[in-house]
Length: 235
Image (cartoon, rainbow, N blue to C red; front, side):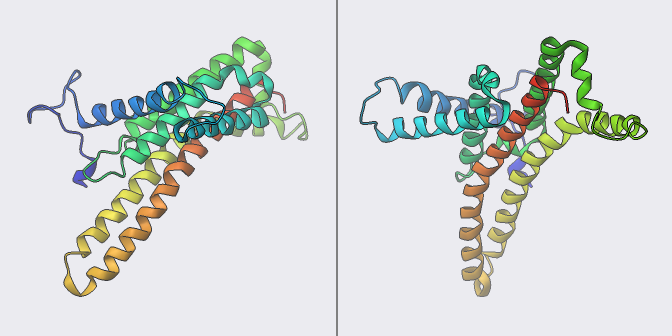
């Protein structure tokens, strides 16, 4: 599991509060990739787009439609944040697939911060936009009156579990894929099963490319669902 170790970039000392680590480096590279695609890649826009501009426009339209379909037109004002979140996770996942790279999204410390930012943001937004009416999210009016208090407790628990499931889903899937590749890479040193191991690594690597996008999509679509609940809390 050494591929998941957080180590200092400079020296071999302990990791402190201001230590520049491999995690910080690869997250910074992910941010630079987002800036390169969405800012520098679209600086000189053309009617006939370049390949980079086409990718940027495709990502823009994809996230824009996702937010509008789930949270409605009112949710589009939060498009910049959700778009940035999606692109950062995608690039962090993809950069982690490079040889000798570090996958920052495989660490719960990173995904938990992303999930908590979403959780706190939508909770504050829910109370700011709706006041105490936001508590209607936990009161299922369509259920029988006797069941409503029980369902309210269940809804309240599930609401506070959101950041846990939101973060573990991303980190767990990314970490599991990398661990499986590492296991098969170990078998590649055994001569008589090396061809099978290499084929398995290739297949899993291709799958991980798909997972990199799927997990970013899942994280983003759940963010849109939580945003919808904050904007329209009534059942």
